Length: 311
Length: 290
Image (tube, rainbow over all chains, first blue to last red; front, side):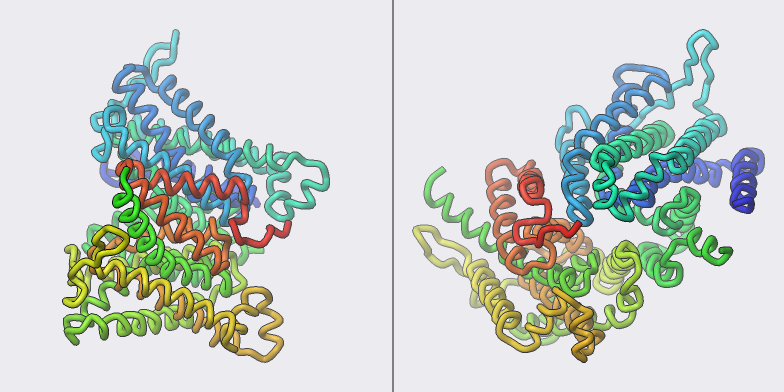
C-alpha cells in the first residue's frame, strides 16, 4: 500500500508539472486522458465493485456533453451551473434506467444498459432540431468559471482548462476511492461476490446497485460535459455502444477494482490510439491486435498484474 | 394498410428473421457451449460476404461460393478458438469479451485492407433475378430462397443437435461441461468445432445477405447488436430462443422500418426491453441461479 501511495503521489506531481514542460498537443492529449480516466474510474465502481458490467456507460457521458452544450449554447450559463445541470440530468437518467436494468443479471444487465444507451443515441441522432442530428453540436464555448462573490475565473485557455479537467478527475477519483473503502464499497463488493448471500443478510441489494449506477452516471456526465466544453463539439458517437466498449476496454486494460487501473488504461488507450493512428492508416488492426495481446498476457489488467507480482 | 402491403412486409420480416437466425444461432451455440460472449461474431458474418465475393470471382458460381465461404470462415473460426480463445477458459468472462472485441477490430480492418474500403455488392444469381407471385403479391425470388434456406438450415441444425451423436455431445457441453470432459470427450476439439460451426453459420448468413444488402467493412458491427438482442431475448445459449427471437426482431424491425423508418431500431430495443422486463433471463432461458 505504501508503494501505491508513492506511485499516486508521483503521478500527481507529474500531472501538476505537465503544463510547464509539455507542448500544447501532448498536453491536450493528457487533458483528454484526465477526462477519460474519470469516465473509466466511474465505470470501475460498477464493474470492479458492484460487478455491474455496463455496455451503456457512454450514455451518461454523452448526456452530460449534450446538456452542457445546450445550456451554454442557448442559455449562456457559466461552467459550474452547466456542470451541475449535466450531472443532475445524467444522475436522474442513470437512476431511472438503472432501476430497470438491474432486473437483468450478467449479460442481461449488459444488454439492457446497451439498449437504453442506443435509445438515447437514436434520439440524439434523429432529433435534429435540438441535437443537430448526425452533425452533432459544434461551437460549444468553454464557459468561464463564475465563483459568485469571489469573481470569475477565465478558464478558457488550454492550460487553465487542463487544471479544471485535472481537478475534476482528482476530485472524482478521490470520491470513488472513499466510497470504495467505505462500508458502502464493501457492501457493493459483497454484492459482486455473492449477491444471494448479501440479500439473505438483509441488504437492499437493488437499492445499492441503483445508487452505484447513479453515482457512476453523474461522474461520467461530469467527464462528458468537460469533454464537450474542451473539444467544443458533441456528436451522437459520444454515446453509442462503441464509446461504451472503449471505456470498458480502458477499465479492463488497466485492471478492474483498482481505480488506478482505469487511469492507466485510459492513458494507454488514448496515447496508443493517437500514436498508432499517425503511423498507419490501418491503426485499428494494430489496436485490435494489441488488445488481444494485452488480454492474453495480462488477463488481470496491467495494474492487476503489477499488484499480483508484488504480493 | 392493405393486404398486399401486409403480405409483403410479413415476407420481408420472415426473410430478415431467417438471416438473423443464421447469425444468432451461431452466437447462441458459442455462448451455450463455450460461455464466451463473441463480439467477433459480426466480423465472421462480414467475412462470409467477402469470401463469398472472392469465391464468386474465382468460380463464377454462386452455388459454389456459398459453401466455400462457410467452410473457409468456419476454419478461420476453429483456428481462432485454438489460437486465442482457448487460452482464456476459466479466466474472467470479460477478458474473453475483450479478446473478441480486439479480434473484431482486427478482422474489420483486415477486410478493409484486403478487399478495400468501398461498398461491394454480391450479384443476385441469374436464375433468381425475377419475382414470384405469392398470396397476391409478386416477391423477389432470391428473398424467397433466403427464407427457404433459412428454414432448411434451422431444421437441419435442430436435427443435428437433437438426433446426432455429436449434437448430443454439444448439448451435454451446454449443460455440464465438466461431466462431458469426465466422460472422456475431448473438450478442446469440441470447443474448436463449436466455434467453427458458429463462425460458419454467421458466414452463411453473411454470404446469403450479400445480394440483398451489400458488403462493406463494418457491416458486421451493425448486425451484431441485433444478433445480441436476439440471443438475449431468446435466452442465452438457447437455439429455440434464437429462432423465436430472430423472428420477433425481424418483425419488429421490418414493420418499424415500413411504418416509421427513423425509429425502426427503437422498435427493436423496445421489444428487447419489454421481453427482458417480463423475463430477465429471456424467453427460453433457464431461471438464473442466484
